[in-house]
Amino acid sequence: MKAALFDYIRPDEVGAALSLLADSPGAKAMGGSQSLGPMLNLRLARPGVVVDVSGIPGLRTVTKDGDSIRVGAAVTHAEIEDGIHPLLRGTPLQKIAAGIAYRSVRNRGTLGGSLAHADPAADWLVTAVAFGASLEIVSPAGTRHVDADAFMIGAYTTVLAENELIAAVRFPVASPAMRWGYYKYCRKTGEFAEASCAARFDSSTGMARIAIGALSGPPRLLTGLAAAVAREGQTACTQEAIADAVAQAMPDHDSVDRKLHAVAVRRCLAQLLGAEESTWR
Image (cartoon, rainbow, N blue to C red; front, side):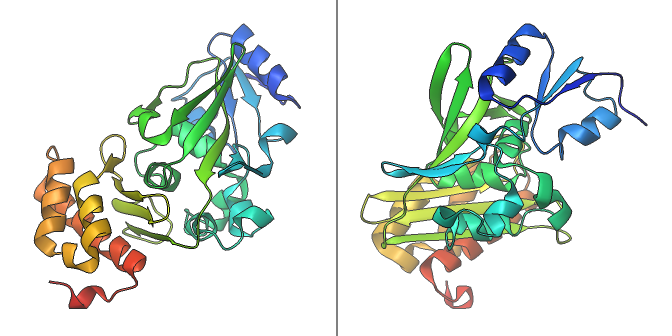
C-alpha cells in the first residue's frame, strides 16, 4: 500500500517548522521517518502536511548546559552510537543507542522522534525515565520543560500538543560515582523488546532510579527497590524483592510478563553492581 496524498515540507529552522504545524491543522512533524513512514504507507496516518524537521541545524547539536547534557531531538541513534558528538562518547547513551533495532533504522531514527512516537517498547523512553532526563518542548508560545516520567500518557500518547515539537532532551551530567545498567529481552535481535529495564545510581547526587519498560503504557519506576539497592547494594537484590517490586508496578499484567520483567531487572542490576547474577539469592 502507498501513502495517501500529502504535502512534504522541509524547513531549515525551528520557527518555520512551528509556524507550519500551527497553520496546518492535522500536520505531522517527522524526524527520521522510521515510525511515521510505515504508518503513512499503511494509511494509519493521513496528514495533509508532513513537516520534516530532521535537517534543522538547531535540533542537531549536543552541548553541555550547566549540570546537564542537551541532546538535540534530531540527533540520530547512529550518531550517538558512533560517538560523533564528543560529549556522548563513552557514555551509557552510546552503548544503549548501539542496541536499537538495526543499523539501517539507527541511521535515520532520531532521539526526539522515538520519544514523540511513544512506543512503549522503545529504548529511549525507559532510558530517559530511569536517567532522570527532561524534555525541552517548543511551541509558538515559547519553551517548556517536562520531566521524562511525566511525558508519556499512554501507548503512543504524550503531552505534546499539535503545535509543539521536542527540541532537545537533557540528561544529567554523570559524576565519577555514577553507575548504570540496561537490559532488554527481545525474541530476536533487533525486534521490539518484550521486557526492558534501565537503572542509574549516583551517590554524589542521591539519584537512585530503576525503571521498567515495554509495558502497556509508560515506563514505571521501582522506587522502593531503588531505595533498597542504594542502601543495601546486592543484598537487596533477592528474587523475592525484585518479583514483589515488579508485581506492584505492573499489577495489570499476567505472570509471564511479570517474570520477563523480573529477569530484566535482575540482569540490569547485575550490570549496575558489577556482580554475577548467578550468585544472588
